[in-house]
Length: 471
Image (cartoon, rainbow, N blue to C red; front, side):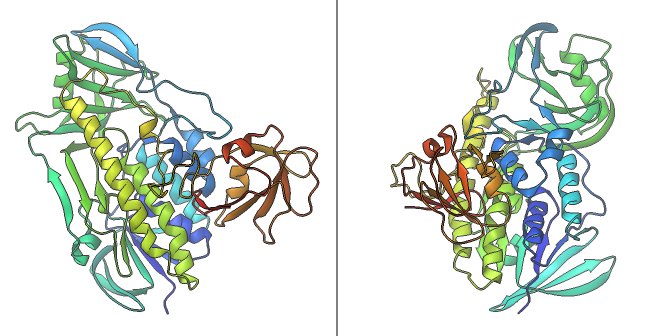
């Protein structure tokens, strides 16, 4: 049987999946119909849970080095500066949550970092390569690819459509994309330079009598550009001249000249959810499975989580255990529906001009996403995110639970007792406790507290950092 996984679409979702498979030694091809890599900021907010995924995948340091924290927003009404605001106040890391704040990095930069990491495993994105059709049987998928008019037939064990809202994979599989598109509301998003503005800050310009109906300029790291967001009315077409008109109308200055419009798109509220995330050996992930408003910064992050959930399950199936594959849709479609609801609520607040429409809290960070049984009442249950904690290793050096989890494996923690036999099993002991086998010392008790553990507690942590079993 074929062992290859064919990933269609090389955005953040497809790249995350290809990387997760490649590091597991799974043969993978990733193709994209585009002739060149995307260049634009689009999904520029990386949520805390995604930072944890990036930690596991070995790209966190590069993402942190290239990006920046969320900027302070300077609010100008009627041309006058009135206040400074943040979408969310920064908070200090805790033992359980090492990366508690949103991180800003333009999507094209995030994709480049993921591509570089993928290349370390010998896998390159195949640009200009379109999926034109596929069939499947009990043993695999036969896909047809087209590159410059040359047709290729590929036999794969599984096919994953990470090919966006207009997904060829979803349409070919005949999976309905349920929801609505609101043509009455349009927003202009783009990347521009505005050198007269201090690039250390974001800006909100609006009329004094309509403070929530204005334009936003948010600085992007790695250059001089800002991401621009503004309402698009009537039949206006996106252009640098139109953006300049908005700025001139609202900012109250005559020296702010926009240049270098490198990316622009017209966004409409397109809120949709695929009826199924799986059809036999074909799976949907990311925007191919769920379309979000940009409010709340959820779309890209949810797609990355899809990929992270699916990768280890595909690997298990290719190793002979396909019992986990059904759990992908059960877990991720439920999450996508909840996230769509959250994004829609935030959009409604923005449209209605509510004062807190731009504020963001823990509900957008994706740290509280869980696959637990709804009937579970424990503070920590099977299906919850596995918390981090600082420890010391057998030699007394600082180490974290996330260090033990990092990699393509599951991890078993045995609190207070000798670990199970296995390469990724550890005893977690309090200072002065003697055990045989690999162990870490919970010097300050943070691990015991985070896992509500007593002596003899055993916790299985899945390869995607969620709790698989507690006993």
